[in-house]
Length: 161
Image 1 (cartoon, rainbow, N blue to C red):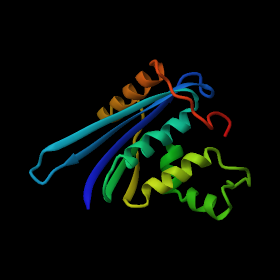
Image 2 (spheres, rainbow, N blue to C red):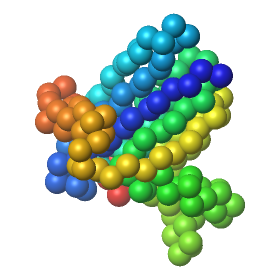
Image 3 (cartoon, helix red, strand yellow):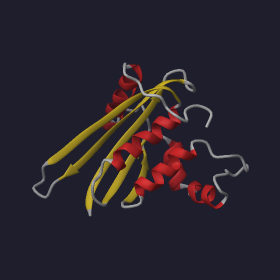
């Protein structure tokens, strides 16, 4: 399997219900030792930070065209803890209810993320945000630039889901 590093961040202005965006960087070192890198970002009119954190990871995984070993680096405990603390298994076993028996927020994106992960071996790593981590800072710039940009998309299920 090819080794991929996926760095991602999400941002929302006036969270919740403000414009938001995500930034994602994929890195791959080919057999000759050459680093390849691709950036993704997109902005939405009305969304939440957590939705953008999820969209960043989803976009990176969906961009991969063959099964890979993927190391995800995110400053979102919401995303990393869902897998590293096994929240996702609990949500699935309780039909998308959390430990307080309330509906899990953003089930549309969690389901999309699980689908995007299927062909891959994915490991989630948490990095402290806004702490000088070069690639996290670059993703933050991509995300905030997308949120502040024009040509913003509608987030169909957006806020409050």
